[in-house]
Image (cartoon, rainbow, N blue to C red; front, side, top):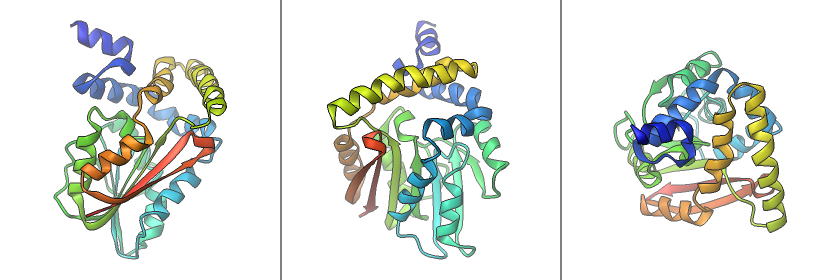
Amino acid sequence: MTGAHSAENAPWTAEGQEKRNAVQSLFSQIAPKYDRLNSVMSLSLHHRWRAFAVSCLALRQGDKALDVCSGTGDFLKPLRTAVGTSGAVFGVDFCLPMLQVASMKQTEPLVEGDAMRLPVRSNLFDAVTVGWGIRNVPDIDRAHQEIARVLKPGGRFASLDMAKPHNSVMRWVSGTVFKTLVPLLGTLTGNRKAYTYLPKSTEKFWSREDLKSSMEKAGFEQVQFKDMFFGNICVHWGRKS
């Protein structure tokens, strides 16, 4: 089909189910090398950014936390530290090869599932995290609604993802580096298409204000966001009404 062929050749142009299929295929391909390249691209700072996101959740010992779009599971360790041995932490992702990598790093329960149709009952969790995942879902509003659904009233959500710097000079520098270095890394590892998707999808990603508005429409209040890494990374967080 023409649509399938287009999604295969340019996954950053895909929408709806085509986007879901394209993203799932890309992350399946890069799963074995994802952690190493992620550390290179973030200068190993992504653990620090995740720690800040978890600190926004105000978790207590014994709480239940869910990491959506869990990937290789790097949010699970700081969540476990926050909820303690009496708490519970789960990860869910729609890409099985990524979860297989995650399973080799920790023992938290991992479930294959879609962010827009979470295989979880309503009002169950005290907190939900998403790291570099909201940008990849076909319907951001629906994903935020699903996250709100599985949270208890008063539960908190934190989302960590790419952003465009406000400063025009930094935006140009970041864009130039991002568009050349990241695909080059992909070429060196044999996955140029997957790592071309990253800057392309960031270009099309929603603004900070649009993400805040989507969270508020989904039922979150006290929604805030904070820039990191010269505005190339942004953390959003809020509380379910």
